[in-house]
Length: 313
Image 1 (cartoon, rainbow, N blue to C red):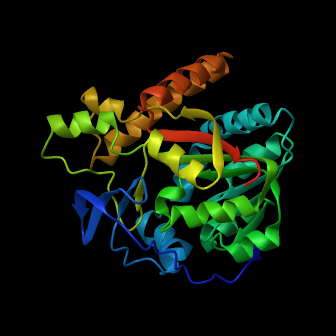
Image 2 (image 1 turned 90 degrees about the vertical axis):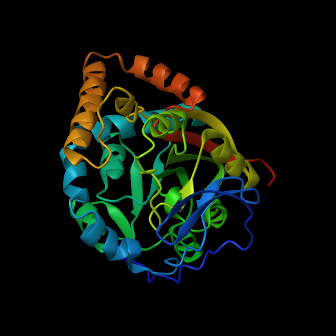
């Protein structure tokens, strides 16, 4: 485990205008004309370095590491598909991966299993210690310019469910580009929020709050189009799109898991059981095609987007 001193997180964006589409706590959620995506305003918690270094795992999600470990086989399959897709896009094996926000290191496990060299970046000391205990190289720090300068370039960069937490996504993407060369592949995963499924459910159940709106943890809310536009504005060209299973479709089937962790766990177990069954019978290609088509319709719960640097930028 390496530890790099955390710099102050001061990424505040300077100008915002657009329609307020939700409010939560002291935050307004703005469909920002300037930024091109939905995000929270007045991020007063920006700059609190303990938000993810300690608070998230100790207070908000104390069972996060254990719950992910229990799903290790499913995560291996999930991450394996992303690693294989990176090789296909690169048209050669990607030998080095960087996992930004590695958590308990399950992506690192999947990469190592497939003969890759992988490094993790993780602000949480607890998660870093766990991932490092398995023999992985993990840097305990927020992903800043200083960290990027120290760790160098990678053939593949995996950044799963991180961008929605970042006060200034454009600045963050500029740092990611610092660890990419012209052939590097970026795999970025974000929740698909303010989606058609969420809209249908909340329209039919107006008493239900927009549960996916969760500042100060989730600051940004992306659609397929707004994410692609953000990447392109920052010199990254989308080369492949897919998604994860639309688990919120269970809401439309009567499984009202919002606010009910037990129903939510059953929904996740059913999704996991389906994907594992397809994988064990060597039919993973069906899932790949299905999720590619769902991505086009904008109904996957998480968007999975692969991108490369725009040449000569």
